[in-house]
Structures are given as structure tokens and as C-alpha cells.
Image 1: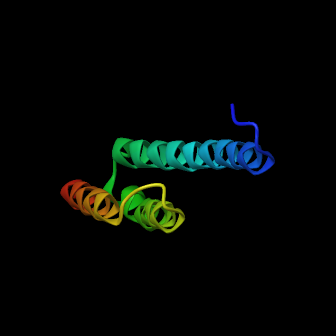
Image 2: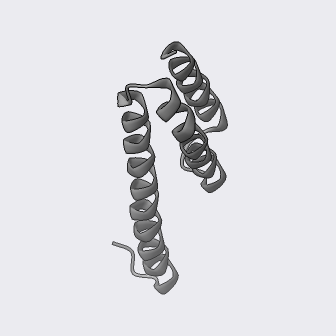
Length: 84
């Protein structure tokens, strides 16, 4: 543990950010899992924009890389179209 005042503050901030990022990431992973578990194409098509929005927000916040987000969105879209 550091002894400097600014470093202690940085540790506190990093802890808050880590918890927040873990929450957003887990929430999005659950949404993706629930989308994949849906049975009908109509339900999945309605939920897809919400999940894509969550993924885009993770990129904006810096939780995941934009290429990973692109791959996730692409694979989800393929799965939803295959449900037809």
C-alpha cells in the first residue's frame, strides 16, 4: 500500500471503477445469455437492440474493446436471424 495521499486516492478510485466495470460487464453478459436463451425470433428481434446498446456502452466506458463488441454484435445478429 502506498504512503502518498494522491496514491491512496488513486487506489480508492481504481477500486470504485473496477466494481462499476464488473457490474456493467456482468449485466451485459447476463443480457446476452438471456437473448440466446429466447425461443422465438420475434422476442429475440425485439430484445436485440437493447443488448446491442449495452454492448456499445461497454465500449464507450472502455470496459471492452470495440473489435470485441463488433464480434459480439455480429454473432448475436446471426443467432437471432437463424432462429427464424
